[in-house]
Image (cartoon, rainbow, N blue to C red):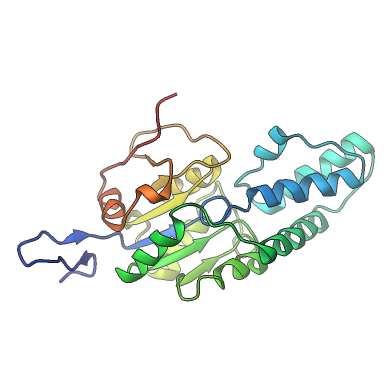
Length: 244
């Protein structure tokens, strides 16, 4: 039997085709940490008297942390005259989010069930996040053995929307990106997965993701099973997000 086929329940059944691997985004896709990031950004900027709107926060969703740190530091300097070190801003944000995740983690609907089903089907998974290794490791440790590979934002030269993080994950797993399915929640992450040549399943959360040729979209990961991921990997898109 091919390694990309799952055993059928009956000899006459057609084997289910499987993706070579599933590459998971973390923030907003696996765990609902985006509100933690927004709260941390708002609190940090508020200490210096700088306002930070929900719309401004949403514009950073999915971005590489060095870029977010730079934008936040520039915003503080422009609005208050206070100069901040962008790397120090990132460190403080990560520390705040790790504390919130350690206190209570909210998994995105359907994510843990799908992750468990992929494990049972022996489909390797990677966690590919713009969060740094200390936060990525905290989350990965909550699902022991689920991820064969973790690629964090401080381990790639270029972050999302560049393809580097997903290319690196596929390389570490020894698979072709074109045979993988990337699971994402943000336009930035979707762009990264598509640039890497992978099939992308978007589950929009904080920010809408428009339809595009070949792009799959679902309202919830609870709608998705291993067979659906196999069909997506084989080139049959799935889109259940209502128009408009």
